[in-house]
Length: 123
Image 1 (cartoon, rainbow, N blue to C red):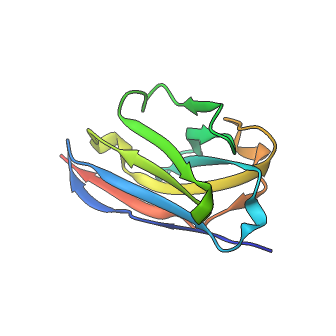
Image 2: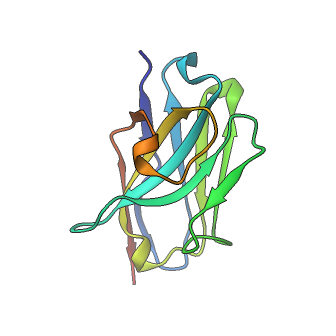
Image 3: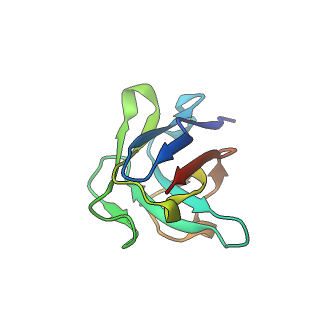
């Protein structure tokens, strides 16, 4: 069974950028939709962005539209989240997730999860 491994988190000042990566250890996730979620202390998981296998369906949370971009490189089994114009309220642990079929904004629709990567935005 494949695994998802996130990377690219860190500490950045407000207005800065980070790019998160989520690499699948195998081609197990071929054909899978991928999503990014985040969780801040004391809060529920929050949907961030999702993308279909063939990029024909992409969704963003209203809070990140125009600032974040999700894209994938299927040849590398990797999905990315480019985060620009970061705000302190973007501080959270970011998780990638995979599911069969079309992309979804619903957390429980996803079957596989990475371990998360911390993003901290200082003001």
